[in-house]
Image (cartoon, rainbow, N blue to C red; front, side, top):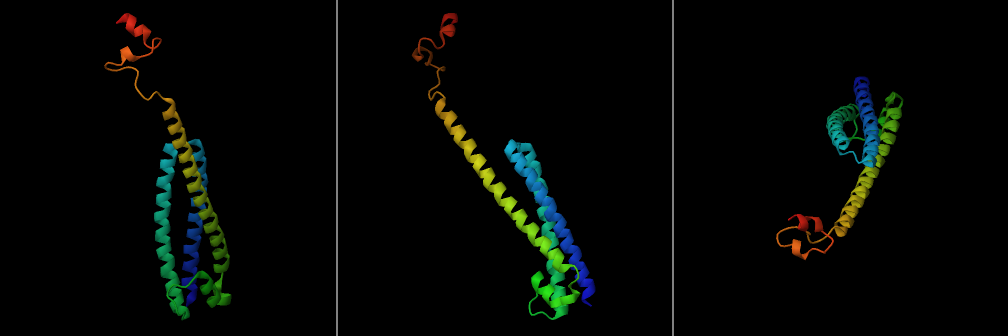
Length: 166
């Protein structure tokens, strides 16, 4: 009886694996766009990431539903078993579940590392941009040279052409 449920679980896990591969590629692209300071590209990547996250939530719901069914069929005490618990309970009947589970665990870890690295890198880049803007702000003249009543106070060399023609 667990055969069809196990096969559905394998299909859901393989879909999750595909999703995490796509997310990993997208995060690598995001890193390149952060380095290039490509705001438009980053906006597009953010939309793609949101679409993948939405698909991931749907797949997670499916996985939880199927694992719950499988747990019930196997008589497991929990309605939300881990994949490791299911593989152990299925024993020889686990099919490809242990292999898919191992690949998925590795992909999730790699994706999380990339996500954390990109967030940290983006924060560093933003901090550097902010520091550069503050530095440029200090280099700029604090009081405007030209404006109502400012022309007379300007240093002699500045605005000489304007005074002569006025």
